[in-house]
Amino acid sequence: MSDIAYPVRANPVTTEPRLARYILIGTVVVLIAILLFAPLIAVFSEALREGWSAAISSLSEPDARSAIQLTLLVAAVVVPLNAVFGIAAAWAITKFDFRGKAFLITLIDLPFSVSPVVAGLALVLLFGSNSALGAWFIAHDMKIVFALPGILLATMFVTFPFVARELIPVMMEQGRAEEEAALTLGASGWRTFFTVTLPNIRWALLYGVLLCNARAMGEFGAVAVISGKIRGETTTMPIMIEMLYNEYLSVAAFSLAAALAMLALVTLLLKSLLEWRYADLLSATRRH
Amino acid sequence: MFVEIEEIAKEFGAERALHPVSLSIPSGALIALLGPSGSGKTTLLRILAGLEFPTSGRVLFNGEDATGMSVQQRRAGFVFQHYALFRHMTVFENVAYGLRARKRKERPTDAEIGRRVNRLLDLIQLPDIGPRYPSQLSGGQRQRVALARALAIEPRMLLLDEPFGALDAKVRKELRQGLREIHDTTGLTTVFVTHDQEEAMELADLVVVMSMGRIEQVGRPGDIRARPASEFVRAFTTA
Image (cartoon, rainbow over all chains, first blue to last red):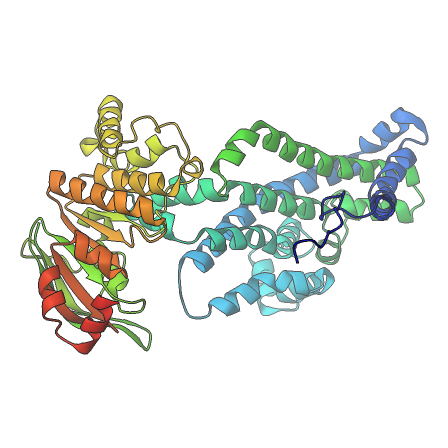
């Protein structure tokens, strides 16, 4: 047996032949270029087709400015609220046992499976003047549909799962032992949450918040239905972009689109910056 | 502190984890709850800590009813099976956690906290690891840090859930000796859960053999070996 000579493998077992490697890597590079970079470059080049000044002046139009303000306002209200709801939902689901837990998890996923347009329509039906609830709000001088509250509700509904979905697997994996340890050491429930639970989920929370924010700023379908698209009043950036595009104002449309893309890029940059800044801490505190 | 368990039962839904069990734990004793998995030993330990509440029965600390007492009020030092060290805190902050969590009036000054933490790190013979994170420690070191963290709150009793379960044989022997020494210096009433009969027999003053939610026998290691109360105890303790 021992005198059988095995051929010596020159390459480690985990690598592929050179040709296969190049083909695979090449495919990925081409796909990334076509799917990610080309559209982004197209948006920016179209926005700047008539120069910087044309792009900037189209962004300072009153309607465009109000759309930007509205979008930022919506994100500023919706993201913190959904962060809190998401943490509460993930906390309840992963740290406690109760009846109807599976149902609650399904409920959290509902906005992912329902088309945003349907969600918008549902809100119009629920709060519109034809329903009893809508009539009550109108009688008390509160506008929901075709106004800011409707846009906020629609955006909240659509972006609800992002934070919870990001947190649940992480918190599930971490289990309850650290919280129990804090309690046995005399910490109150709140103290346990702020000093043990929250620091352990901060990175997942950051990712969830960023995803939620990107979607809150970019949501089109649900907002399109419930906002009524009143120019300068209830048009968010994505709605305004579509309107401008339909009016053949392509520089204005693409300038606003570029601005929206910039907002997303800024949040991504922020995330990378934070990760880079806390890289040491991250590697030290993560379990092997 | 002496502990009495009176007719404690625990049900999880339809499942019976503990049939009514009674047990007296003398002050300063080192007790092993010994049994196979599913015998209810961890449930009993968690009921003592206040992490679970019994379906029926009473727990008495020094003769006073402590059944409804919250986990924070009980001040039981608890060492978890996988230690449950706070992964985002240094060893120093882990050990200091219980002191910092105290109400302002009872909270020691930062200097005093520092002194106490360092004293505990000396006690577990790891004086220099304060600045490290739990992920940078070996299993045996983590276990000792968890012990120091539990001792930091000046507990009324010490509860340990499979304290040596996740360690290799050599480290296990050393730490057994370490626990015995810490028990003897602090004089704390100590209860530990184990499925390892050799560990229970070697370390404990009193061994409580459990099976399927019932206490099969309570006695000194030698007595249990010499006069097992049931066929189960005989088979389990000679395994």
